[in-house]
Image: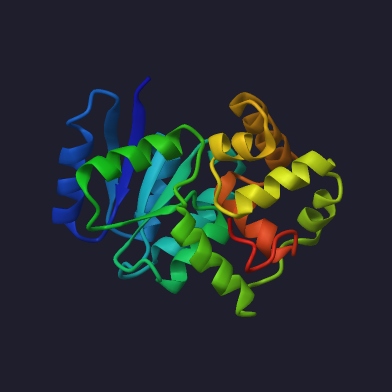
Length: 225
């Protein structure tokens, strides 16, 4: 199956480099490009890609606003946004995750890592490493984080005890295989618990599940695995 990608960055040279890397693979194809947030939303609505590589800082409308509009559009529910950033601790990255982005990558990452990240997001997973999760937790614990929507907090109460346990481990940055090993489950069962929890709380993907786990108090800073 071919993964369709839209590139959004105000630097044409960078877009050209990413296009060359992505299209060197048989299963990836670039179906559109944009140099600012307004153009990004228009292109995404037109071609409906699987993944959007979205720069956050751009002249005019930035990638944060564009990410919010794309992720809030029910008609674009199948589109995943992967944020491009120069600095791992960019404060806008945390906000992008809350708004629905499925993770982020640094602009100077290795080509192989870019390919892995795009495929990972296209498969429905999130690109959120334990080190990044730890920084996100610190940010939430600083008191700067917003509280999650009331309906999501209420939905947490509907989780089974096992599902709450699984969400806690997702919040600590564990992958499905690691959760399975920790709880003595099969990887398929762990994945099922994660999927059901995401559906119940209305989380777009694992990145939002991590954010919700901490902002709701289900998991607290200092509980990292």
